Image (cartoon, rainbow, N blue to C red; front, side, top):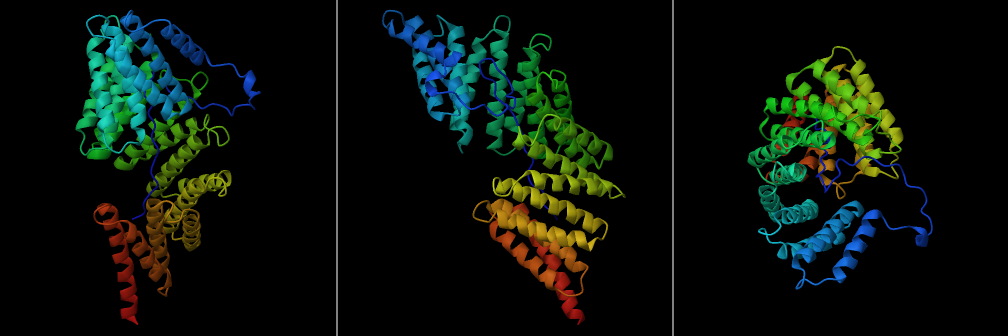
Length: 461
């Protein structure tokens, strides 16, 4: 069994007003530091701090609390823009101070907004956290804020909190087993949609649809329910109604890619050439926006998805055209990803090219493809050694073993088969029973088949 590289997913939590982030062109050379004006948000932050310096908590507790909220919220947004955990942490501390001066009885709305801002900060800070304590705290804050925000007068703020609660619950679900958290996340995403209208807030409405799509995809990954994939595809298709390649190119292209990935999974699960063809169409649409110069990471992920869709279509087709195109796509990717500047991406591209060559070689009995696949896997391994990425290394060693086994099957001696067994042994040294039982089982089955072929040939002599 050949293993594929993982697909990439995307979801953005909503801040105080904005939505999905779009790719930006490379910035021009900055002017002299003294000539750079402060951003509007930094200017507002300075104004809030000046006002705070003119009052005291004792004489004006409500105004003091509101200013602390404004300062904390601005710090969190700036920290997110700058990818500065220190700024976000400073904002979180300031928001905690604000909450001590904003009692629910006197200003429930401002308190709810401060709770939402603090939850946003915690959601940001929890990205690299292994446990779920910070996410649990964020979820509790969102829920308390939602309870205080009226559907009639605070619909947008409430919907934003519901959306981010869904993101929080989904991330908690990623850290747990089962689908219970994901189903809670679905309820939050549905609630955010119920508080929004497409005509009034099309971008926010679309973002909630994207949340639904991603959560349904997660549920499919856990329980294999193909109906969840269909619901994910429907949600992404709905989101596309709000985007256009001219006005919202980044969000439009990413949603096209997400929809294509969902249709790819459906096409594989259903054995449907039509679904795979639809997936290819959406990936090609995304590539109208994603370019290897301006948005290299998104471009590479979409190329990866297109190559996989073509390869799966090739497995279902009697013709070699889809696999020929898949090989061509990966050869193009190889030219666009220099090994010196992006060794990981280069290794993934090289291994993916090997994967497509191997598939074509086995399907159409082309020994030259299998030999090139072996060489490409070997080059990928050289660019991504075990100590740098043991999981990628193990997957590539397993796939190299499969290619060697297929080549050995077509040869008279046992050299390729012996090398195949050694490759599977290397993969098994990483995939232990406690950490990767299913992958270990795959490698063991591959090894057993190769060893049986060796034993059969030796017994026949």
